[in-house]
Amino acid sequence: MSFHTILNKTSVLIISGILFVALAITPVYSQKTTSGRSAQADTTVNPMAVLFEKKCYSCHNIGGGDKKGPDLKGVTERRSRDWIIDFIHSPTDKRKKGDPIAVQLFEKYAPEVMPDQDLSVSEILSLLDFIEDLSKKNKTFVPSAGKLVREPRPEDVPLGVKLFNGEIPFKDRAPHCISCHSVNGVGFLGGGTLGPDLTKASVKFSDAELVNILQNPTFPSMSVAFAGHHFDDEELVRLVALFRDAQKREPTPSDVKGRIVWIGVLGLVFFLLLMNKLWQNRLKGVRRTLVGR
Image (spheres, rainbow, N blue to C red):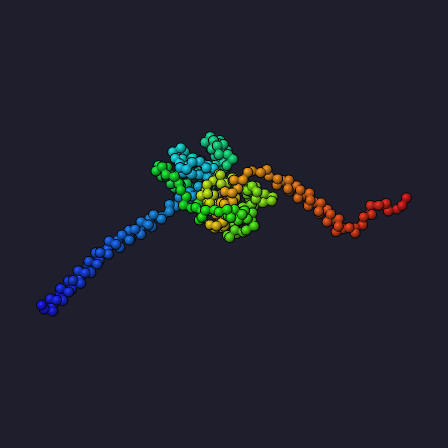
């Protein structure tokens, strides 16, 4: 056999081997690429789901029943889009103008009052498309956030109390809850009255809803106060632990007003005694008769 014949056969074998290896790894590479793309597609978040979770979920469900406000499942079938846009922009104005549906909603969900929303018309229309799509598919909205990193433990309750009343500062320097809210048994003089009493917060809201409200506050005063401030995972766990524990307590009559009165009276007495002590050498006979009669 000549040298050229051997060389040709060797070249054919090498080329055949290369083609075999290429054909063998192509399906594997293709499968990995496809699975990678699928995973990427699966993790894509619908921006309207994010917007709904941030702006609407604290008060509304889609398919999960009424909350502080009505369930929005099928709302586009019950109301026209123009009506919904006007109502979202200014619910109170709609009621003041005597709109019968707005009046009925305010009466049904009192004392809750929906604040004006700063959403653009295009955002509202996109949200309505999102709600309509879930409604037609008979799906319930499930928030992507709203999950605790771990289950609260009994030892989290006192830490939650300290976070609530300001004994422990929040890591992101968020304002303390007691400035605007109260919880039964927390704080010698109770809490603020700008926001609602949170003693029954765990009865009114699920854990996911509480976490969502804390992470994405939609109430006007709270959203301003928490602009640029966020709770970390452990702080959320401890606050939820406090709310769970608070709802188990028997309601006790508040004696805050009585305490304030007594503190005021005792403070006044102390102040008068202090003033008398400081000026004990004052001229006490200045009002006596200057000339004897």
